[in-house]
Amino acid sequence: MRLDKYLTECGLGSRSVVKKILKNREIRVNGKIESSPKLNITDKDEVLYQEEKIEYKEFRYYILNKPAGYITATEDHRDKTVMDILPEWVVQKNLFPVGRLDKDTEGLLLFTNDGPLSHDLLSPKKHVDKTYYVELENSINDEDIRKIESGIDIGGYITKPSKCKKIDDNKINLTISEGRFHQVKKMMHGIKNNVTYLKRVKFANLTLGDLEIGQVIEVNREDII
Image (tube, rainbow, N blue to C red; front, side, top):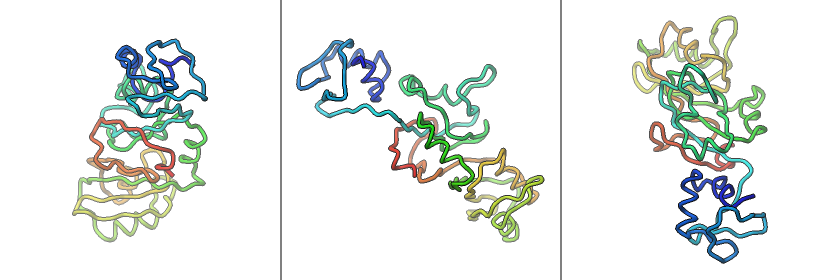
């Protein structure tokens, strides 16, 4: 693999950024400063950036704090997609979103090129938890919470048991292990209520933490499950 492609794949930045790094003589290969982007790199070579070792990874994992107004798709001819938010050097890694968030929904969205992991995270058999912060049009009472947690009819289907924590009169944290279309909104309709704001705050073992809206960070596989 060419050195410039290797550095991009390792997450140092876009091709233009990598070109500048090489020009500034900030890369060492096997102890020698290297500025040629054409140098062939193998898995036996040691590559350092600012004296720190960098390594190529076959699979990459990034999380985005998705803003509202973007659809979860890799491309669309009408609407802006979540791919439009990602930095160029991340997009170049042929990533795809794991699952989906509605256009008006904010929060944690995972991107990867790891197909098997994506399948496991989305498989109904795996029961992977997803937690949402939900603001409602009307107040919610204990009976509503009981219905939500025990399973609620969302139109010919009874949801699996979930966890619902009341934060305020009209605010809850809802944890579900399914991912049906508009499920959270339909569950709230089932108690005669409407969602006014929805944000996913946790997916599997991943949490938003202090990640700002629209910000992207790389995570490790072991952080996810």
